Amino acid sequence: MLGDAVISPSVAVSDMEKAKQFYGGTLELQVVNENPGGVVYKCSASRLFVYQSEFAGSNKATYAGWIVDDVPAVAEWLKGKGVQLEHYDNLPGVTLEGDIHKMGDNFQAIWFKDPDGNIFSVTTAMA
Image (cartoon, rainbow, N blue to C red):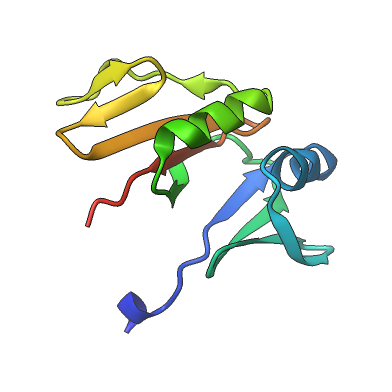
């Protein structure tokens, strides 16, 4: 049942104006709905809901990730927008080459944080 549904992650932020600048401006996500509860951004067939909360940035794990064909190209695009990429050198079975985390022959990943420290990833498909 839920396996056939599109999932829509929600992320808590402390400052909606900074969040709008980051998600809409820096990441260039399109707003599909904005109301007093938060902002919904379009990501292909998915949606990302951003809302204000006192618990913003309290998760130390990845909130959500984008699956792309060319991780290095996205890494360069993000860096060009002033986004700092995270480096994790303690992940089992992972090698770090520049900004790209590699696992096996075909899997690549990068991580970055929003202004509140919420962690996001960009990866190749793991299918």
